[in-house]
Length: 78
Image 1 (cartoon, one colour):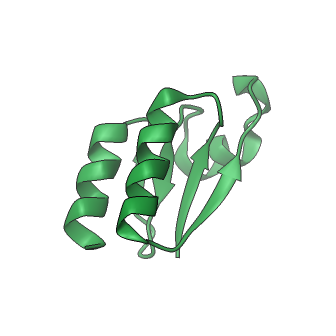
Image 2 (cartoon, one colour):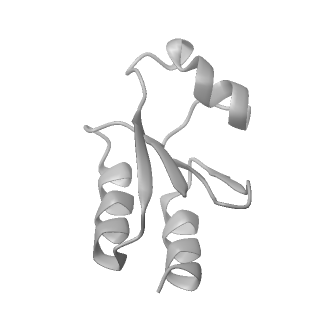
């Protein structure tokens, strides 16, 4: 299953959530703290604190790039 690290207030995260909903893809949504220094799980798995960050079923990490995440979703979850 996909896992999306995101915040509710981020417009780039909203774009990714909308695409996930449009495609009907199964995805675990993980809300991260507003304070980047507190995003320990996200930093541990991706080496950075930016959102949105998607972890794919095969372990690919697409970090802090909504366009790349949406392109991945369109290619792999139609």
